[in-house]
Amino acid sequence: MTTRSTTSVVEFKHPFVVPGSPRQFPPGRYEVLVEEELIEGLSFAAFRETGAYLM
Image (cartoon, rainbow, N blue to C red; front, side):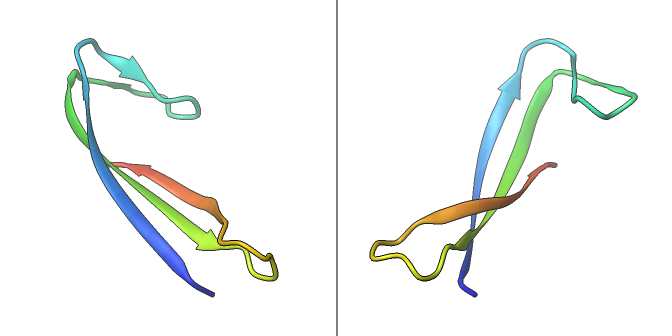
């Protein structure tokens, strides 16, 4: 299965909470990693997200 990863940087100006996490995160710059896999069997290239990580 073909996979791909994309990274980007987001900046939060205020403290924030991620649903499902009991803690509050401080403002700042965070790297976001998104992993996707190719959906096979289609007549065109399409990917579905398999994971997103805030680092």
